[in-house]
Amino acid sequence: MTTTEGIEAVFLETHNWGRAAKFFQGLGYRLEFDTGHNSGQLRNGDGPYLFIAEVPESKEPETRLVLQVTDEDTFQPGPGVEVVTPFEDTHFGTREMTVRDPDGRLWSLQAPGKG
Image (spheres, rainbow, N blue to C red):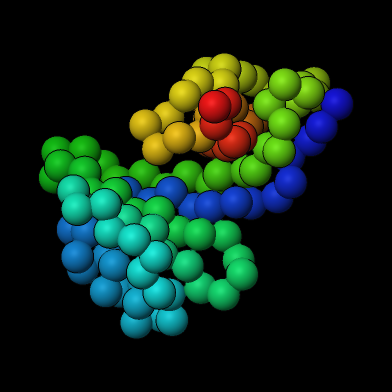
């Protein structure tokens, strides 16, 4: 059975992609890519990457930590881990599972895509 491998990323929603990207660049993050549709990925050193996505003003922005899973096929959550959604393909080529902690926070677990 494999376990998570630590924090892979921070997923951050914002109401203004440009301002958010500029803010983090002002803190030393460098832009790795801009998707061209109000989202992109930044990184500071060798740590977890930061993915920022713009959401409509009507939606409350969320932040979610993404934990790395190297092998989805051998990963089994332990007791006390509520699986909200099993591993599913993402539009960006990975597989993602969502779990809920005892305080109700959602966490994403990201594994390599199959293909």
